[in-house]
Length: 136
Image (cartoon, rainbow, N blue to C red; front, top):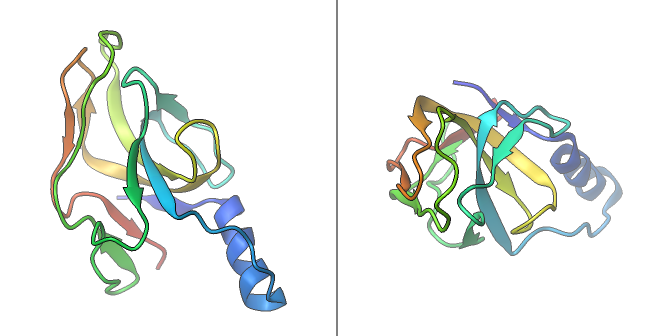
């Protein structure tokens, strides 16, 4: 299962680590769905039929402590459809973590274990431990 840290996040970390610059770390992260793989420079195809990304305050217990260079979600995440559009054979194949509810910067991304079909108004659930993000 692939995952990636984007160039934006990597540069933010290097600026903080090597130059001591403050940078702007998000206090809230937003989880989005992809139907085509993003890369370290962004891109991919974000599925927007749900209306908005799922938000979570940084510092809560959304992710486990790092182990072996990776972490995973601690509980089931459910993104509920707010629109009746979006069916038509698309599959969610990646999850992205952003610093804004719309637009913003893609920070991290990872593959889903099993592609999830997009069906209008049906929620997408990510089981506990299934959103695995690692850098090593």
